[in-house]
Image (cartoon, rainbow, N blue to C red; front, top):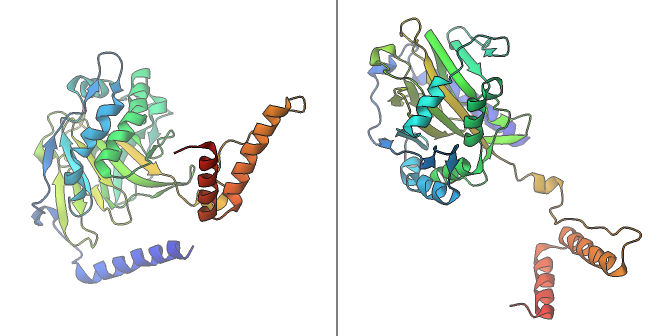
Length: 329
């Protein structure tokens, strides 16, 4: 509880300091950018000929091959990857991008004046079968393995509800102010760790705007400006100061929109170990069970109780004694 309030006070303090240090009007296009960040060409090694498949054995090494670039990027860990999806897969996603305006498509009412404007979000669950399959791929274990190899964060969990994620679309005049994303999935009680953005904008012109801006934690310097071109993927850590957005209004012609896929990934809190005992399956014997089966079930339960009650050092000693009795190495 104290840590939560301390973080809240820290954010307020940063805001006050920023107000003192930075002029009220800044032309972000005139700011110098970091030169240590690069863009990489790397295509996810997946098979699209028989469904959508990414081999678990190749997913992790592919991510690890880019991990150094990710971890050393400034101002926070991130990477920009061009030609990220196989071309046919990216083309098919764009071809199936939802265009109809139906009541089940979530139109953003959260259009804060001066901060957010003309943004539409569509849940994959409200889309056709291909889109549901595609997002199922992004939520599956092989893609998580790629992200774990890339980011060094183990135990990543996808969001089956796509809270805040899915298809995003912003029309002419729209923008999204610089921000740090929400960090707790309040429905699943998980900690948000990673954002993945995949852009779907063919023939995007520089004068349309819509570049994703990455800022340092003091909000004093823009570190990077990234054009939302077709099949470009951006992955970055989500924390209290991972500031990003596209604050300049789009100037694209009517009928052209800024399209993207947004995917968010989480980890579970280890606080669960403070709330529940961590033990193996609890077997019980039925009243009419034979004596041997009931005895085995009792032994397994006692082992679980021992793990719950004994200090770890004593539990390990007990396990070593048991192994010696069995003659195990």
